[in-house]
Image (cartoon, rainbow, N blue to C red; front, side):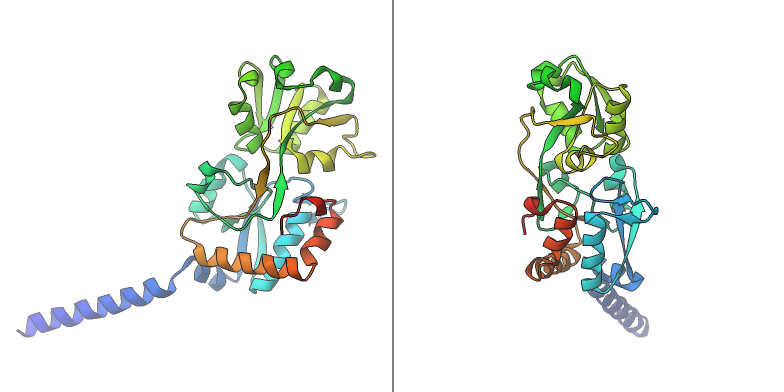
Length: 265
């Protein structure tokens, strides 16, 4: 009887400890206890990029810092390889993916999304001198096309029958795909409209390139990607986004980077 009583008491203690841990050890607690929120990014103008002084800046950079201020944690920006973003998130090398992340049905199986805050689409970028040659996807069928691996640009290439025979050039980042076109080592690239518009504006290093809207690209939305079990963090992110939209902060940041017309909140 004494042995049975000891075992029962031990089991009760284990059960109580387990309940306490399970009730408090949420993903948000993990982030809050660290005091920092690790955000996975790539260098992607105008979202996250280094300015002339080598300081990280951009719409997403300022947006992230503003949200973290609301949440009482410090933002830590971690450069990642875009094709490995899901693995980085699941392994807790990062806490969020926040870098012009397009919401897709496939990605919903891998991560939990915040509310969408910006619209986007995929576009083709070519040299200005060649713009008239490519009125549609069919006219690009024999080209060498660069794209960022794991991006929405790669998705649309795979989904477009007219591009099935095109030579495909997977790059680490979207800016590298643009560099390929500028250098003439790829004929075209398929990238985010937000990035293409920022890079090819007059007076930029890429002003000899132009943006073509010649793809059957459905409207896309940007959101923040969190771990599937991380509902509390996503709720807090959504609350902070709403506050920043309501007080005009988000619009002010977007205007700074010529993105106000793309906001969804």
